[in-house]
Length: 299
Image 1 (spheres, helix red, strand yellow):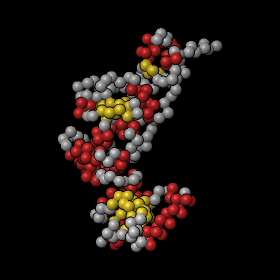
Image 2 (cartoon, one colour):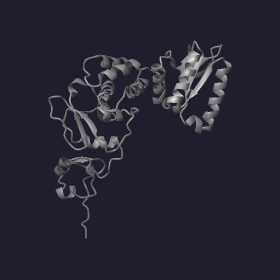
Image 3 (tube, rainbow, N blue to C red):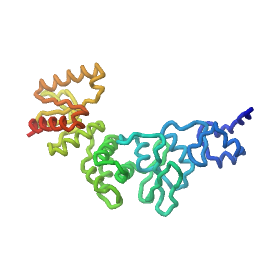
Image 4 (cartoon, helix red, strand yellow):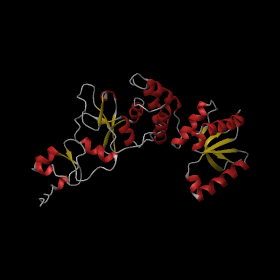
């Protein structure tokens, strides 16, 4: 008959804890080996398994020697940036330490150097590299494209427009070594006002086709100055507006009816309304057809 599990001290029941701290509280080593305790990383135990990256980061952080900070992809996840790579609970955690310090070597953790050059901030209790450095470090990762960097950077400056000069200054400087070419290309393309990752993607399609640059989320008024609509992409002199429509514009009946009424109002004022979807950006033929229509309207 299996022995009953001895209860843990109250201070160890609600969160992950270090094995060393448990031993200081006289928890027997045999108790720490029991299968009711999860082992998120070497030297840490928890009564509850992590269900997301935030919880896992808090658990692993218990083992990290100062100074350190979450960086690269992990920091970007914690900032909740739109990223091309789907989040997996067991993906490696990226942590940066000073160049002179011993790098972290443990399963499930990727160590980086250069923390002495990076600003570190606190984010919901997590120690992370600053927004600008997190964005810049993404450029050094395999599989991150110019488009991905623009989408992530647009998301940062949509939240805090004042970040735009910081992102551009870091890209233009000499501190960043890896991925600097893509970073500088992306920095020049960042704009305040992009409302979603797909809007950023659409803007890049327009830019790469050498179309005139549109206003983002531009206000459209009637002749009396009354507000009519806010357009995703507005070419005011040509009276052309492009609206990106996610799937909820199709599945939400109220949204669908609102879109129809809004289009009717704009067209009555002489505006040409082009409604686009993801297919117009991803499918080569649809993209060519869209760009041909826009060139005809804008040139």
